[in-house]
Amino acid sequence: MLLAHGASGEAAEAALRQSLAAAQEMGAKGPELQAAIGLARHWAERGQRNAARDLLAPIYGWFTEGFDTPDLKEAKALFDELNA
Image 1 (cartoon, rainbow, N blue to C red):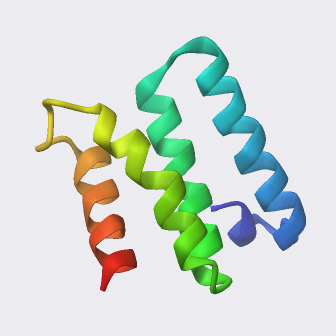
Image 2 (image 1 turned 135 degrees about the horizontal axis):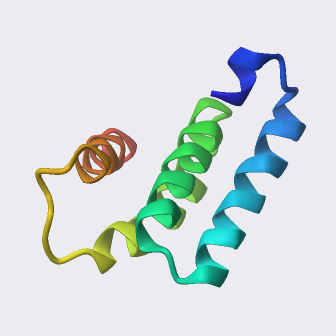
């Protein structure tokens, strides 16, 4: 993740938000999910679990198939963790 590469918390969040916005602008649901997972995890690590869950839920809910793919498995696991 960005923090592992020395990015500050603010810089990491800005990059994740930018990635999310770019994916949404392109209508690219896979990259949107990946960016949402990253941003949700970032927020959860900072105690913003409700915001993380609120971000991830509608994007994960958009998918109707492919639940055995790594990204959707990761999103489901994170969503379950946020709901625990």
